[in-house]
Amino acid sequence: MRIFEDEKVKMQKEITFFVQGVAAPGGSKKGFYIKSINRVVMAPDSKKTKPWMALVSACAKEAYSGPLLTGAIELSIQFRFCRPKGHYGTGRNAGILKASAPKYHTVKPDCTKCLRSTEDAMTGIIFRDDSQVVKHHTSKVYVERDCGAMITVTMAE
Image (cartoon, rainbow, N blue to C red; front, side, top):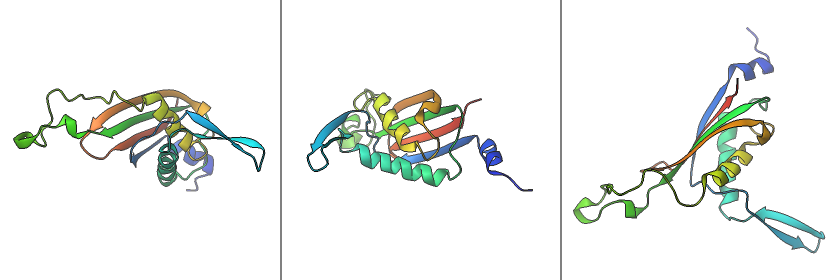
């Protein structure tokens, strides 16, 4: 049986992949005037943004190699941050999580800005434009190991 490209897209309704690393915020920009080209060039404010976006792009390319998805898309991302040492006991309690250790990552970077950089990194690889995303489910949690982001892209029905 021969499968045409548009049929392949219909068959693969969900793409799930993991990006290992530390999520970086996107959105904040700073401008630089470059005299030689007589222009202002915008760059991400955080030095961590470009490397994070490159990781997401590489993982997205590995997970999906079909034509760009068209239509409405649902995006689910769980940002996983490694727990700091202060969440664990010391001495004979080393390695044991304190009762006061939070479950959720409630410090910077914020969820919305992490979503922005991650979504932008997938644009042109999995979907044509991030305006196609009609539904988000995003969370930030602490984990013991395997920090990064678990990403699922689903065709909305």
